[in-house]
Length: 137
Image 1 (cartoon, one colour):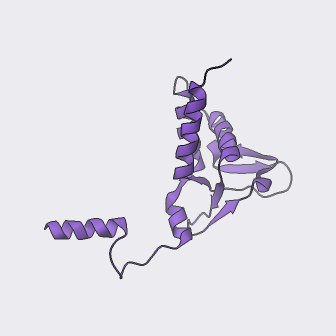
Image 2 (cartoon, one colour):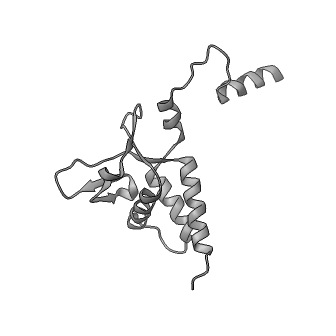
């Protein structure tokens, strides 16, 4: 019984032996990404707490801040592909839907499916907490 549990645990962790296909970089990245609307909410709560209602506008503003600190990715609707979003692509954009999408006033197409890596989000949240604690002069 214990060996069965160990084998199941190894399979879940991805250590199932030779028959388990190795994830390529794109698959690993997809599993590591946090949707921007969730990331902006988590970062906002970490930075400011939840004393008031957190609106989409608050999350849009936090998504803008995160986009200046972190690398953003765009995940396809079918979640089968991901691409890195360059900062130049975001220039002139307005975050909407809690950070899920960036829209443009010119004729450029909106960029949706925005996400950040969990590791980068954790670092940004820690930095936001530190700036909140910093003494003001």
